[in-house]
Length: 171
Image (tube, rainbow, N blue to C red; front, side, top):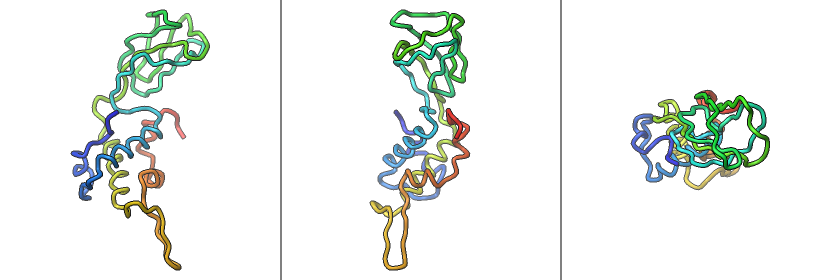
């Protein structure tokens, strides 16, 4: 899966110099962000995902921006009597069965172009991690001590307000 921001985005969102490991840092920041929001954000085509059947009439796909549902099968039998919303909900009037791995779903979701605020945040997290002393998390000499940034540490300390509107489940 592609990074939420590319090396070419670095200079658009920060004046910090582009480090040699910028691509790695952007990939790491993207992973931390995707873990937090619980979906990919960027455009992704999912083919034949095995999904647990919830029972009831409503199925929630793991997305906040559903673009298309190409196919759904229940116990390997194709069904077409469903409707879906951009919010990732798939409704079926006769209901979904209940049970693990009973649904196979092919769908497209995510933003075709990652929103600028998400790109900016990705670069900010990666840039802050790049500014830290490589390989060190914390050091102390006498009464003096310093804690350095890692992608995970920077992400945790920066405000998540921007990302909360992209998060599947609010904190």
